[in-house]
Image (cartoon, rainbow, N blue to C red):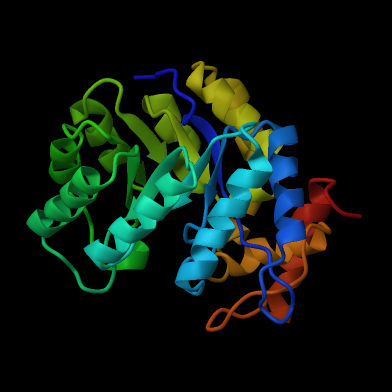
Length: 297
């Protein structure tokens, strides 16, 4: 069911720009925030997977969220990535996000320690009870090693400040179950660029996208058409960026997207170990995509 909410449509999983020595480049971050405001992106997700949450220390994590909110200056909602595999740490980051006036928080399922479905339920329930801020669940089993079931998501949807889910399974059968079983008004977001348009046409409310870093305007328009039920227009735009959807995952995210943003002149090549710069033998594949789209010459 399509709903009207500020956190629907095309939302970017924003990169955290860095200098080549790995320090955060806040000037570039400001430039990126402005780029998304001007391009029609509906919201920014700060310090998610694409924002290298795994390699920023606690203070840096909060500082990047804070500066993103500062630079947005109320022009675009900012969702703070505050998930952790320790419930107490997730609460701490979520409280910090509330303190700096984030619009909502995105919480990835606890990774590596492989909690049960009951453990996942209790984890999110505890965070929701501990911090009065809107929360979006985030299920990405390909990266976390744990898959939150649709039934667990439906149970969590009954908690008043858990307002939605980002489903990055890429499985449209899961999407259909979420659409059928979740209560009306619960925000259903795709976290898989390749299947997002189909997800939205089925009744989803938008997506949190890696591709939106590179082509925010095209993606925002495609999602808007899909939300309005104009499948032809939505798919026509999505077809233009089909290769990009695929090639932005030619190596682990955010390696390709950071290199693409560097080629577009938005940031230096900086990325933190254990991630490395896009390998030279795959750079030309992504470069060809950017040339074909008229983004670079």
